[in-house]
Image (cartoon, rainbow, N blue to C red; front, top):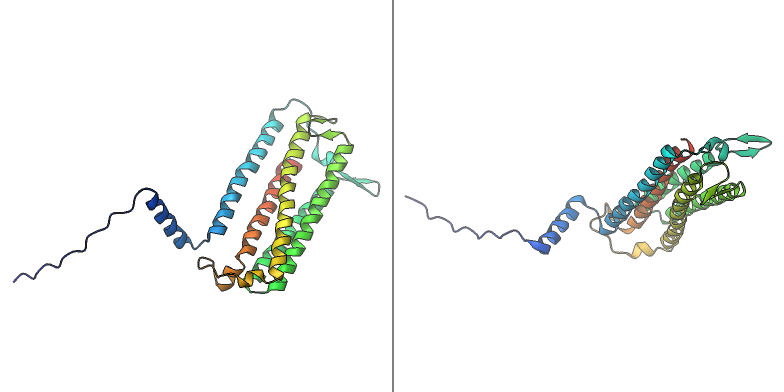
Length: 240
C-alpha cells in the first residue's frame, strides 16, 4: 500500500540584483569573522600598496634607463662622525627605530586583547614617540641633501631624476608616518580614558576584548604597513 506523499515546501529563488549582492556580502562577512572597520582598513592598505608600488616601479624604470650618472647611495647618504665618513649610518638608525616601533605596536595590540588599558596606551605612545624620532631624522636627512644641492627639480651631483624620486617617495612615506603618529596619539588617549570600554562588543571581532579594543589592532595594521613599505624603500633606494 502506497503511503501518502508529503507536500513539499516551495523552494525560494535565490535573490538577484542588489539584494543578492547584499546577501552575499553579509554571508562573507559572517564566514570570515571580520568587522566592517577592519575590512575597510584592509581595502585602504591595498589601494595604498598600488600607489607605493607605482612609485617604486617608476623609480626602478628611471634608474635603469637614465643616461646620466646616478649618485652612489653610500656616498650621498653618508654621515661624517668624528672626522670619519660612515655610509648609510643615519638610514640604518632610522630603519632600526621604525622596526622597533613595529614591535612596540604589536605589544600594544596584545595588551589590548588582554584588557590592559594603561599598558596599551603607554605602548602606543612609545610607538608614536619612535615615529616622531623617525620623522625628525628624515627631516635632518632632507636638510642635509638640500644643502648639498639636491632638489626635487634638479641634482648638482648627477642625474636630476634622483632628487625628484627621492623627495617624492620618502616624502610620501614620511607623510604616512606623520599621519600614523597622530592616529596613534588620538587612539592612545581614548584608550587611556576608557572610551572603548564603553563601546558595544562587535560580534564579528575575535574575543570579548577584541570587540572593545579592535581599534588598536586596526591602528596596528596601518603602522605595520608603514614599516613594511619602508623596508622596500630601504632595499630599492638606499641599497641599490
